[in-house]
Image (tube, rainbow, N blue to C red; front, side, top):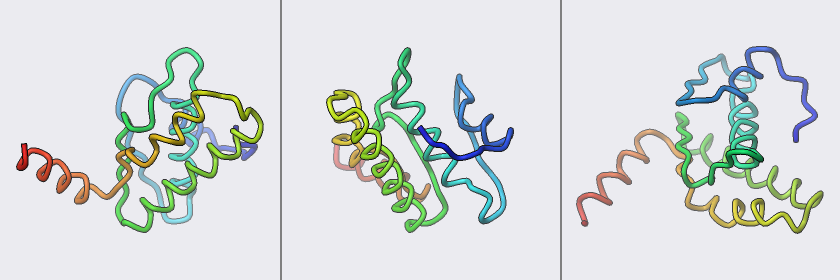
Length: 118
């Protein structure tokens, strides 16, 4: 995947298993890169892959959410250049548009709309 040199704290955030994760750090510290790598690791996990639309990734701004979605899509595209017949990667790229990558406000509003119109 990424050839970036991660700090120990970043590695811990990327590879943590078994539940939810909160990544909180200063501006410019690599939060978005860490979360993108975490998503990539989760959706490409050979033993227990997770579909992108089963994750909830929350950021503070709509711009950050859009950037994160774009970076995830770019990383999937880069991986598909290496393994173009990878069915899982093809699927993840298709369902990425349905992934919950948003601000907390947008996610809550979406839940309200879904439940209100049931």
